Length: 186
Image (tube, rainbow, N blue to C red; front, side, top):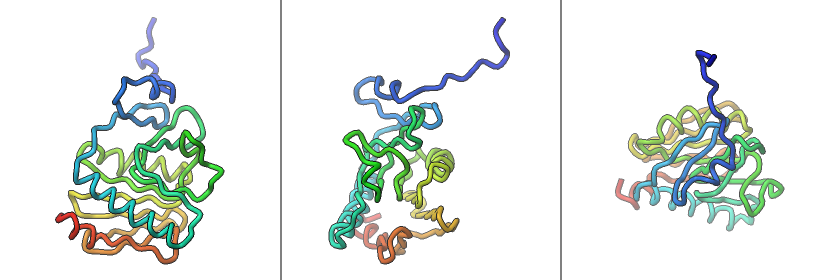
């Protein structure tokens, strides 16, 4: 006799690796979430933010590494959690292998698209906080808003695309969204 509540199937990283060529998906707590291809605006914003972080790390001889999607992050070092954040900053080289990052990055940035809004604002927010990410940014081009979660100090700050947003894992890094908006005409 079948139970009234059928058990939900839990997926693993092997299921992600066995997806058809070209499919993109993430795995959170054993559930697969498929991803749509990013828009041109998304990619242009991503490129500008990545460039600013990369330049800062290089000019300050920083020990952190910045990686851009698709980059594998195995959040809980298990086979039930696999994400590809838009930008990941990892300051502990012991977490890095040729396959990606094993454990929580120090800083993650997600750029919201219409199809990722629920994932970025709710599911990933909770997952990143509980996994040990120090800082999480949600960049929302449609709302022209940046929400910065500093999990270490339990602080949340909101910025607009007219502001420079302060990076909490560094003492003197700001991302100038006003300049990005001007460059990209958004």
